[in-house]
Image (cartoon, rainbow, N blue to C red; front, side, top):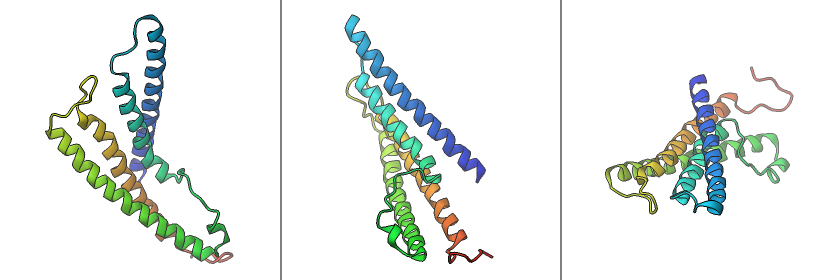
Amino acid sequence: MKILDTAFRYLALLGAVSFAAAACITVVDVVMRKFSGGILGTVDYVQLFIVSGAFLAMPYAFRVNAHVSLDLVSNFLPPFAQWLLGLATSLLTLGFCCLLGYYSTQSALSMLSSSDISMNIGIPMWIYWAPFALGLVGSSVAMAFNVADQLRAGWNEPGKSAT
């Protein structure tokens, strides 16, 4: 388990580096336009790094429950209903991530065997799909562990110990 958590952390770090690369390329491109005309393929690079940053960080965010959640309605529910709603949403998220992970992996493999390239500088399209698929498959694994943790912890009435 620690190995996966470490892998998720490194993927998130790689995602942060991707966001930083996108920002740096954009700034350098804007500054260079003032002097010589900019960077060829800025849009291709920035799109790749933004998608990579977002999807590579997702497994870590899911694993540590750092994603956005809305608890306005659930706060009014009794504790068991809150636990049950949390489990149900985790299961739905797991199913959705598995579905997207499967289809994005299929698309990445399809792009790997094709000759599709990006519009401006010809980056092979599978390179765009790889972090997308990796992030979604990693998110599926993270959510599976979250569901297992929720089930293992179970629901306890307030004031009773989990023995």
